[in-house]
Each structure stands twice: as structure tokens, then as C-alpha cells.
Image (cartoon, rainbow, N blue to C red; front, side, top):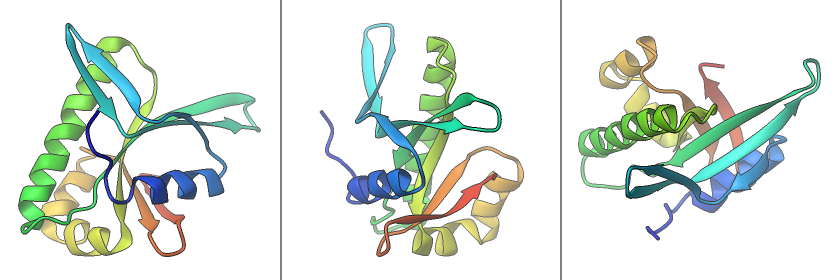
Length: 139
């Protein structure tokens, strides 16, 4: 099993504080004979609609020497996982979870903004010290 991201447990606790139930840790993915895994699966009851919302979360710390290389790797993984989820027929929204400092340095500049503007990725922005979700993009 791949090593957990340094923020894995932080995001897990933040999701739980936000009312999510963790359903998978990790979330298994398979296409053909290839097995992959996203970091977390979670669900939450939407009381007004009396149905369950389900998500898959990939956690990324962006601690490498280059934010651009970290973004390329995270984006590649995100796109791959989204396609595998589609092929598997799994009806869950896929999110990339990043810390608030990473969001501020990567996703507020043009390079990150183009991904958000064109709805290429969905983000969960978390406060790593308070272990809370601060923003869902799109919300």
C-alpha cells in the first residue's frame, strides 16, 4: 500500500468535524488488473433531500521542490482517478484536498485559477492547524 500523505489524518479529522462519515481509508480503485487507491471515501446525509452525498478525496501536501511539479503530479493523479471512477460506474464526486497555504500559493495564481475556472478539478481547502475544512471549490 502506498505511503499516506502527511496531511492524510488531518483531512480525515477535518471531514469528520464537517459531518462526513469516512467509508473507505483508502478508497480502492481498479481497472483491468491494475489496482489503485485514492486516499479517502466519505459520505454525508443531506437531510433536506433525504439522500446521501458521496465523495472520494485525494490528499496532496505539495512539499516538493517545485509547486508546478507537485501540481502536475496531483492533476495527473486526479484525472486518472476520475476516469477510473467513471469506468467503474462509481457515483462519487472526486476532490483534491490541499492546505490553505498551498491553495494560497498555487490556486490563487493564473496557473491554478485556470484549472478552477474551467472546472478541471474540485478542491477541499483545509486548515492544517485547526483540522477544519475552510472551503469547498466549487461549493
